[in-house]
Image (cartoon, rainbow, N blue to C red):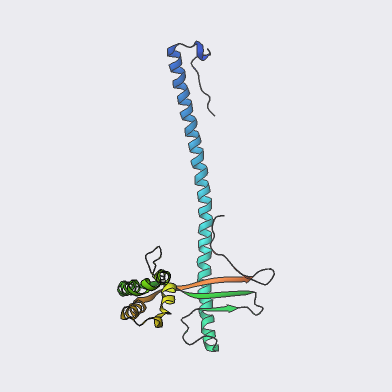
Amino acid sequence: MGQMTTVTEKPVSEMTTKELEEFLKAKKKDEAAKREREKAKYEKDRDSSIEHVMEAAREASLALNRLKDIVTVIMDEQHRKLDEYGALRKNSKGGFTVSNTDGTARVTRRIDSDPKWDERAEKGVALIREFLADTVKKRDKKLFEILLSFLERNKKGDLEYAKVLTLMQHRDKYSDERWLEGLRLLEESYSLIRKGFAYYFEVKDKEGDKWQKVELNFHGV
């Protein structure tokens, strides 16, 4: 650590104006040097911490990629064997769950896909809203609000498939052409864009009562 060099040993109260100016100049120079040393130490420690974390992340990423390759091969083979064995539904698109004999571990493969609504959805929603506003709202405002909530969009601006499906389950409740045509358009506008498979690994807890996920990602606590 550097030490400040003063221009005089006299107390500050006895310094001349020139001596005070030189004293303050030296003090500022020392303080600036101290800040630079602290900055350099902080940045060195920060860079070291980041590199340590990144190295661990790179190793984990390589391990996860190896796991993905292994799981893909094994589960593809398991799917083929289940298909031959007759344990899969004929309309299965590749998703299934397998457990070990004593029921303490299981692996699930699910289709990873994104929902998509095309331009027909906008027209369908407009027809349903018009019908609900003209008829249901006048008779039962609460029911109107409930039915309308099934057409709410999520943060991405998309319709929620589960909500729309619930609305479609009430198809037979009304015979108005706008209602029926709106639901038909919604149904036809929906499709799933398949991205691949997602895998989930679970083990039974110590008591053997509940399934616990083997987490492959984490969140800060």
